[in-house]
Length: 483
Ligand SMILES: [Zn+2]
Image 1 (cartoon, helix red, strand yellow):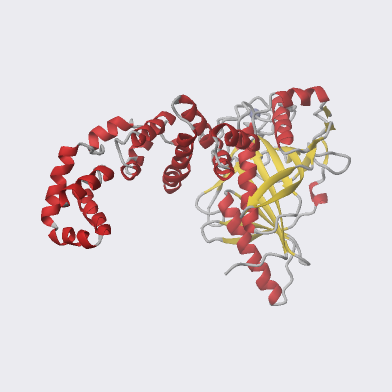
Image 2 (tube, protein in one colour):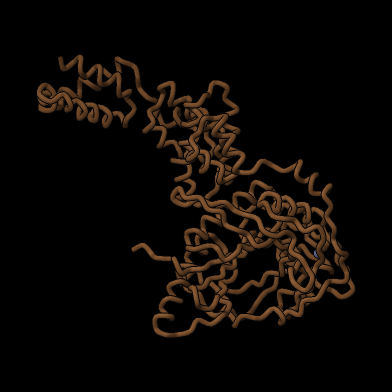
């Protein structure tokens, strides 16, 4: 059943850790805390001790500028931080340092767009603003938050620089939300400010309402697939409630991934609850054109530019190029492979792309891995394509090599070990063909009336050799001997 989403209004707030910074936002602690011992990356500053003054990480401002340029936002030339006050175990100082676009404050940048495409239809998702703020500490529970007998606090995350990307309420379906997030992730990957393959580097808050009804926020969803699921659930929940004459209340909900339902967290706080006021321990930050120009000059290539280049230089179709560039690691892999083999031309580029997007992507999906988490090298795929093209193996056999290729084993080695080389030696083929003719007199008889029956005999030859015979030569020899 296809849902009708005409009355649905969705806005997304995506929080991305600037994981490629070396240090935290307002202190010198190492920001690479992923998988490290809890509370090992901390200092008096990010533990909230009194009297410690923050100092700002300039690189964080550079990274934000890079993203703002990539998203075509309008960068504000001066801004200052606010204290957002709340009392909670994850917030050692009892306030969070953040930008705020009210009370005279400004976002880091306003506007911007993320282009998406669904079923061939293009749309620009309009952004409202991008913000900078610090991440609170991480609360760890045993089992679920509801049943855990205690809460542990890990301050390694406290003070990590976050960038928040806020859309206008212009997203009209859960599928559109997911596609927007995929494209945003791609752009962020290309800017090099964050490695979104690391778990926990990206969290999404989704605002959703049915036209004429109150807005509900679903907080802290960890994956794009879950965002889509949570939105679908919420739309259903709102529709049921409205049908039964109930009123949707404005509130903040959580998403339970296991049970796949949202649950009530708290009634929506209002902004005045946070008692925002300007941070006096940090200066007003001014950005001049020179600063922006320097970052512009060093901007890495963006996915849309790379797509056009792949179309032009490698003769890839728009469709292929578009999918290929989405994952930067995949596109890097493609580029390294095809440029290492001088004999490759358009045909081979297409083959290389097809392998990456087809069998290899399928394997990665099935095993929930990214290409950089395997030992496959661009050169192994080059060798595979050369081995297919010079007739040493059939495409069908090639598909059976993927497991070993992912372990980083060279093609020649796999073939030597498994004996899967294609057989094109006429004497060996003739021997197999003779056996098959002898064992299947009825099919041989059939081929005299119906030439298509030859396929059945080719199939029998293949079955005897696990598909290693060269099909063309086998067919020739069969025809010759039957005559
Ligand atoms: Zn620190």
